[in-house]
Image 1 (cartoon, rainbow, N blue to C red):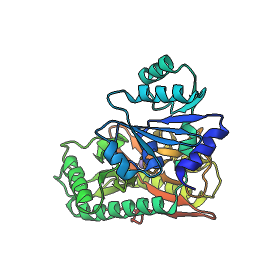
Image 2: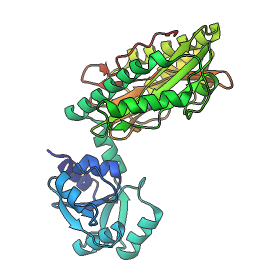
Image 3: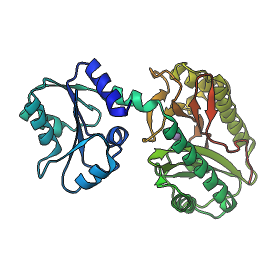
Image 4: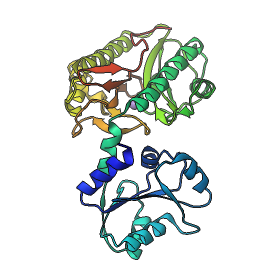
Length: 354
Ligand SMILES: [Mn+2]
């Protein structure tokens, strides 16, 4: 069954006669279209693709099973509202996390019916990867590992954070990926204590940690990995914190069982870090799903209601962040299968002193 058919069934089960899809990732996932500024109108028996003249040709080329409608100079919301009226539907699904208040008001003004949420249907569908999706993610992971091999030789005192980020991004585009899946994070020593450090002109010194968190895209699918390297003689505290993060990451990987709760997996890593005395310095969730978006379902964090089911791909990335000192994070991506899991990142994570 194709994705649009599956979605339609789930949408009908929720009581919606039609849905308006505007989220770019969801549009790509359902229709295959890779551009922007379009919408889908999916009913019980029709699948329509709304676009203006800039995008209609691309839509015809990339989509299958969709009737491409040229909306002229109308806004997408107005064109969708007119379809709601034309078909006389009363219950319409929308992506509440994506639609703007302005678009919602416009819909209500022109077609005053009930609009409800369908976000979870698509998040849950996207969370379970098919073989082709998984293969794209695997290739993206392999390219990222190769990129890391490529830049390790330049991790020497004097190099700047931005130089490393630039080199990784250049490598990605030169070696079969579409480019980065998110802005490359490179943090030296005290900058690594900021989980999402922006690469700066800070030059590397002997005895420091280098945290690199990065990923690329292949056919729209993201990879994401983090490694922390030591350059020269790092202190015992550096080593202790690194060992703690590594133990937490390994404990979490060992604990993965299909159908467990994401929040339980988070707690495995959190407990290791807490017992070592660093519980207050691991503030973020252990992991996140990944696919067409770099952050998607399932959630592997406190209070997540996600169950980790076969086909899920997510990160396992504990970290410890010591303000004004340094930070460590180690991140792999795993895919759950019927009995266990596969680690998609094949890259050394024992402490490497360069
Ligand atoms: Mn991540």
